[in-house]
Image (cartoon, rainbow, N blue to C red):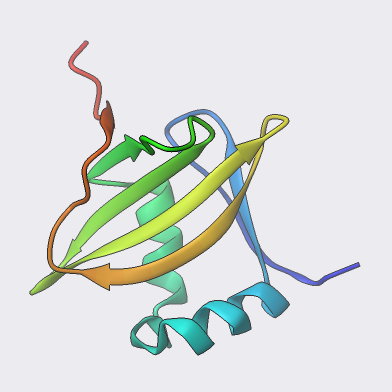
Length: 104
């Protein structure tokens, strides 16, 4: 069983987990997030905005400003549980259906 590095609740009423093994794979592809584990967790717990993927309704893009960039954390919700697909720094928020914060 892979070692869970963290599991954090999101404002979308599901938790997202990350294993050490998968974090290592993300760092290999996106070395710019090395050392940003705390920021990744905060992005999931306290996102500035969340968008739903246009391609996959089960995929959510969480964003927080990390000047001069935005930290993006992409998570998939499967059977009520979430896991991180990837995380990276970007200069702009991607398109997608805005779902957080709600305008209610």
